[in-house]
Length: 337
Image (cartoon, rainbow, N blue to C red; front, side):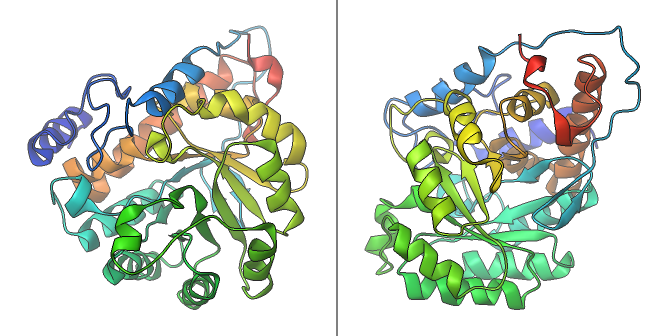
């Protein structure tokens, strides 16, 4: 199997829901929700790509860095690189039912683990979404992180306790799904959370708590004050609110405010190892990959996911050598031109 075959197969199986474009930038699929596009005008998705592209890297080759250290520890997990699969659920709704929910989730979790990293798993209106994630995480000996919709606080706590029992090293809540109509229509209301509610969730759970969907310094500070262990700087892949800035634009401000007190992850438009290095230089401890892994899982299941991650890890290694970066845990902002 090779990446060209994976992409060709994915394009066929997705049936136009995703065209598997040569450049995944949100232009062709703007407004296609359900689907793989960005909400409304698609501006938030496109802003993620554009914001990251505007940062450039300094090429440096007069140094002694020839064997950079890519491995790291994030949320108690030993990883081959600071790259984690993002939670994606709703294959039937958004991805032309190209795989069953169980098969898709098993593929991304196993593929990430085989590449030496981990994957987040999703939640949704059907109980089997969350259950598929727990099953896949158990099968991969705990190398996965369940992400829970911002449900009623008692229900979030209940599902977080299930995650801990399944051996997950952490759990998260994608608070940027606070206005999802399909959840409310299914009798499972979601909504924003107060700082006090976040603190209540943290108080009643035993594993690290991640809040995904943070785009402002004040929200990051509130999470920190509530005792949250990690945040993901994210606009939900451009699928929650139209016209937000790109994540790379806001990341430096958020990282400056809280990265010494909590783990800061980021997603949004990351397509290469060079993009990973940019996000680390802008202040993230690690990154999440969404659409690239979703496409590779549809086109090649676990092997396809592993191929994409191995390619990206190789690109990250080369970018570190060519910028004089010795360790992913200590990427200088001087990497950015």
